[in-house]
Amino acid sequence: MAEVINMPRLSDTMEEGVVAKWLKQKGDKVEEGDILAEIETDKATMEFESFHEGTLLHIGVEEGDGAPVDALLAIIGEEGEDISDLIDGKSDSDSSEEKDTKEDSSDEKEEETSEEDEASDDNDDAAEGEIPEGVEIITMPRLSDTMEEGTVASWLKQEGDEVEEGDILAEIETDKATMEFESFYSGTLLHIGIEEGDGAPVDALLAIIGPEGTDVSAFLDQAKSGKKSSGKKKSSSKEDASAKEESSSEDKKEESSSSSSNDGGRIFASPLAKKMAEEKGIDLNNVDGSGENGRIVKKDIENFKPSQKSAPAAKKEEKSSEASAPAVQTYTPAGEESFEEIKNSQMRKTIAKRLSESKFNAPHYYLTIEVDMENAMASRKQINEMPDVKVSFNDMVIKASAMALRKHPQVNSTWSADSMKIAKHIHMGVAVAVDEGLVVPVLKFADQMQMTQIGANVKDLAGKARNKKLQPKEMEGSTFTVSNLGMFGIQEFTSIINQPNSAILSVGAIVEKPVVKNGAIVVGHTMKLTLACDHRTVDGATGAQFLQTLRTYLENPVTMLA
Image 1: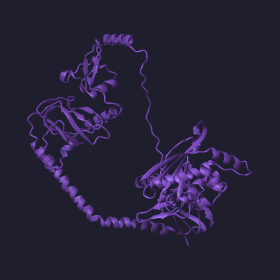
Image 2: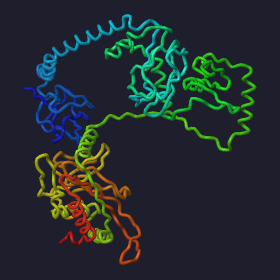
Image 3: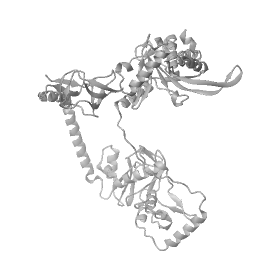
């Protein structure tokens, strides 16, 4: 009889698994104990072995795809066996909840549909006759990618004024700068929706432009009553294009709307006209503006034709610029912005989730001490002179931390909503960096180990972590964690607590520096240790006392043998 294999729960925190690789293919013979696939969990990539014998009849999750725990992974049975009922049955069970949900929510959808129909009818009614022909509704533009609200700094046109395409209507203050907003329509400014100094959200009614004498009171009454109107949809796509152009230029730096000419005068041009001129290589000195006060607008750039008069002026400008050019030219870097998108692995998702929960939920505080490592260095040298013995400074820190926890059990605790648990055992988590992120294998009962045993176990667990051979039980149950970046030359850093622990120790590099001993300045070796504590369980004085004891052990390693 065929056996259904579901996505296994390979760790206590696993909610979803990704099939990294299938080691058996559809139609292959499978023996009990054979490795079916490599499955990426939230902590590591692990081998998943079969507990059944037969032929692999069906693969439910393809390589690289993910599925929640208990989802259909594979089916093993006798060769040629009909498994359509099992596959269909699984699909039916997976879709039954969706079907129930659809039935339960059918009434709500019908109500929503009817409401949408009514809203559509309202919009159709509103559109009939309330927005006269030729009238354009101008809404508050989105002038930057982060803009949510704008403030009208000043109106450059008033109600009743004639407006030409390209004229500046108003100066609008965004979340980044004050920018000029130009009109894309010609007509009369019939209505101003936002007074100077007032703010409004993006897409709010800013102004109305249309033929002179047009009555727009019906639309304004409807807008004040809070009803939606299709007129708002008349905001031109030209405005959207302008918003994008001005947004991209604003991120660099808002440019002034005017520039200086060669003779010291000023050239008035709209931001869009300046951008178009720059793209087309047109010198604004040679363009006659048709806008207000001789302002150069969009249509002036579109209609510009180089004349013979501009040639001598250009040559004259070149000569004058050469004569007055500075000795050092400003370098403007050019390149193409690009990104590479990398799909987040299960481990990376879990790291993000767990550390965010820890940082946001546990009130962290940090304590730092500087330890004299002269005696520790001498002791390590003597220990490593013994045959077949190798002890690292990290091993000494782990041993000293485990012994300090025995004297300060409050640091070896866990917080929960109803109680605080103080662990009687000491399981040391050791942070290990791997290609996919970070794993924390656990040394069980580390306070009972000798430094040589700690070193051997850490080396073994770190090797398993980098080869993706760690088992879930080897990463569970820590009561305290040590993270060491000293081998990278990092002198001091802080870590995020590895929940449900109450503290984590950050170990820096041993640094050679001048120190004061017996009133004299001598060359010494020191190491900084930073303890991150959860203030819910470990008070400042408790953390400080723990570090004092830890300092004693490290500065006098012989005390760890007592």
